[in-house]
Structure formats: C-alpha cells, structure tokens
Image (cartoon, rainbow, N blue to C red; front, side):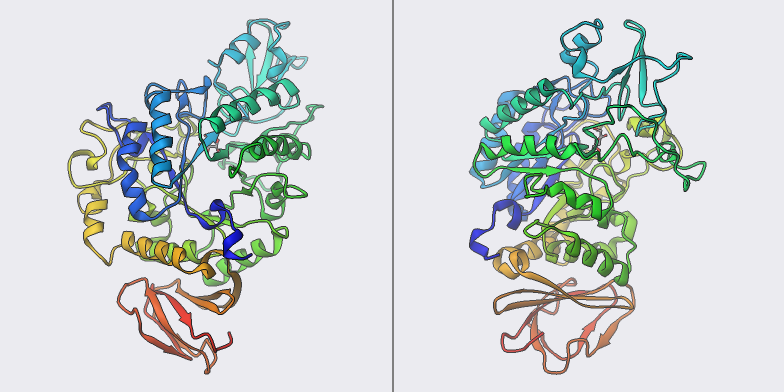
Length: 537
Ligand code: GLC
C-alpha cells in the first residue's frame, strides 16, 4: 500500500486511556475528563495519533463503566456531556482522534431498558434481553457459565424466569437477535459519531450472539480443577457464533455513514478464528484486536512464529495491529522485565500494523500489588486467589514525584506504585536514555519513515535470542534486530555485502554507527538499521 492512501487508523498509534486512572481534576481520587484534557499536551508530545477511552458513560460502576446505565450520557464521576464535547474538540485541535468504547453485548441492570424488561413478562422490552424458563428442577435453563465465575443465569423472582449474563449478573446481555436492539445500538453509535467521535472500540464483540436453541456447552476435556471456572466448558454455543458477523457488519454500515471513522473489535480468539472478524469482504471491524503478544513466550522463535502465523492468516487487505497491554491483562514490564520492555517497545513500533499503547507502558509501569482490602475488581472478588485480578494493571498514572504521583491530591481509588518517586513521567523526560524517550524516538521514526508503517514485513532470522526482520517500502529498507536475552549476540546475519547505519539503539548510544555484514548486539539491545539502498536484503 502506498503511504499516501493509508488511513489514520493504519498509520497512526492508538493510546488507551483508562479514565479512572489517568488524571483526577476534581479531587475525588478518580480520574476524569477534565483531567484527560489537561494531559493532552503530554500525549501530543509523546507523538500518538488517537486516544481510546475506556467507558465514561453513566454507570453504577459494578464493572467500572463496562456496565452502562445510559449509553448517551457521561457519568458524573467523569464529568458531563459538555466535558466530553470539550475533550473531543480539544483533541481534534491537537490533531488527535478520539475513539470511544462501545459496550453492545450487555447493559447495566440499572439501564431503563432492563428495568422495563424485568418489570413483567409482557413488557415491550422483554425481548430486548435473554429470558428463559427455569429447568424442570427450578435450576438455570442450561449449563452456560459466566466469564466472571458461576452460572451465566440469574433468577429474577419478580417474573420467575432467568436472564443471561456473559459477565456479572449486574450486566444482563442484550438480545442481538432482536432487530430493535440492533437499531437502538446503531442510534447510540450515530449519537456519538455526530458529536465528533472518530470511532469505537467494541467491547466483547464475539459474544454478541448466543445459540437460539440454548444447547448446553460441551465439557472441556483439558480443564484442570483449580483453573478459571469458566474454562470448565467450551463456549461453543455462547461465543463466536456464525451470525455474529452479520451483527457486526450492521455496526460497520453505521460507521461508514460517516467519513473517516473506525470500528475496532475486542476479540480474544485463536488467530484463525480472529481473522474472520474482518468480514468476508472486509465488511466487519476495521481490525479485530490482536492480543497474541499479551501471552507470548518471550523467545525469538515463538515471537517469529506468532508474527508469521498472524501475517499468513490475515485476509488480503486486512490491516494488522499489535497490543502489549490493556486494562484486563498484567502489565508488560512485570511479565517480561524492564530490560525486555525496551525490546517490546521496539517490536511494537516496528511491526507491520497499528500499535495500541496502554497508558503508562511508555514509562514501564509495573503491576501494583493489591492487598486483599484494596481489591476493587469484581472478577477478582468473584473468583478470588487465582491471580486473575485486574486492579494491579489499573493504578494511577505515574506523572511525577509528588503526592499520589501527580495523579490526584487526595488518596486515589487504587494504590499508587511504590516506585513512583523515581519512576514517573518527569524523571523519565529528564533522562534521554529512558524508556519514555525510546518510545518517543520510535514514534518519530514511524512518522518519518513510511517503511515502518506501510512497508512490507519480511522475517529474516529467529535463532537463539535473535529476532531479525526487515520492513521495506520501495528503496527504503530497515532492519530490526532484537536481542530477547541478556547475553551479547554477534554474527554475519546479514550476508557480507549488506551495509547500512544504525538509526536507533534501544540504549540510545549508537546512532549513525556503520553496519557492514555483521550485527553486534549487546544483551537486551535492539537496533534499527537503515540499509543502504543499493544492497539487497
Ligand atoms: C471487556 C472489557 C473488560 C470488561 C468486560 C465486560 O472484556 O475489556 O474490562 O470487564 O468486557 O464488559
């Protein structure tokens, strides 16, 4: 693809803001929209192109905003509709796009649609949710499980039926087989698109449609007792059903009513299933989030293998994307260590596809230990003690060394990391060798060299701890050499004729160095090398 014809969501970098934890402006220990507006200059300086906001809509906060009680209003905790309008206007003034979180699979049990739906069996909204008779013994209608532990069915004594919830019982699932539900969500989308939103990240989208015969899910033969309770069954009848693609293309048509907007899907599925979400004729999401790196074994061969599998599985013209962290998964820096977090930054910013950066990963924020009395995450509360808690990756952004890391002037809703006085935006900005500066340089290079955004990807070597690949657009060719281990690596990996110069070392001290034939990497070092145009790779 030529650089000129690419869309912003292809060449740009998305930055995920978890609004509760980014910046508090009204002294309640919870981040808010005004806080985000204050921090926009930081994001501009970092060089990102779009922000994705986790939900800021009216919500009782049973699942911290992923339980929505009004899709077209802002929760007072985060501010007002006017604040969101201002945020969109300000962001646009800085040339930043704003992606909102659309949560179409379920509402809050406080949403007026559900309040009506549960009022009586003949309420006009009854069929907006999934209601079933109890089994003969009064138990749930079938064996479907909630993602967050326990049965997926909740008994409602008012009407003596059960309703289905993929997540918490406070998050009843909408009935996406009902056209009225589709239309209502389409209207929600139009409401925000008209207000200037640049698109949506669609939550839990592979769960939208469930089996209309309500058949039991099969037992999972690989399930180990003590594991995640939901893994006891294979979600054959509750997720990734063929009809889901029709529901998604309906949303895509709404997006396409407006110029230049984007639809991104949250989908945790194996690559071969995941890529179906582009749609048969690319009429699905613009891209389904690719979470392969979140659980990748941090070895050159495994990384190369998963990149190759992904590249091979993509439909023609399906645009790739990569993610290192989000609000549901442990922090990268804790998973692979701070040394390798630099290599991961290089990988994220040099692979083919849109990178999404989770707030704080640019300063290597780590998991924050959460004491039992500090647990906020309902998933951890429902399924305690097996390490699935999501609070540890959601604490306040570490801005500076002042109280509460500059996030708030009162105690924040989750504890601030112990290391905040030394590890924060201000100290990192002062240190040109910091991870923050590595991100900035990488982002600058992505802007400068189209090979890194729209160029081809060519795997070269995955041996020992070396991962070597090439990005190429016309005569612009870059080699990316990553040492995923602590020992130095050296060798004639390029072929003796090949020459070039170092654009960037992850240690920020070899820029301009000539490279001829050999590549020499220190332990935990990554290099970006510009190849001389006359040499063939
Ligand atoms: C998505 C969100 C997660 C939320 C769940 C239910 O997976 O990322 O945070 O709990 O959906 O809405």
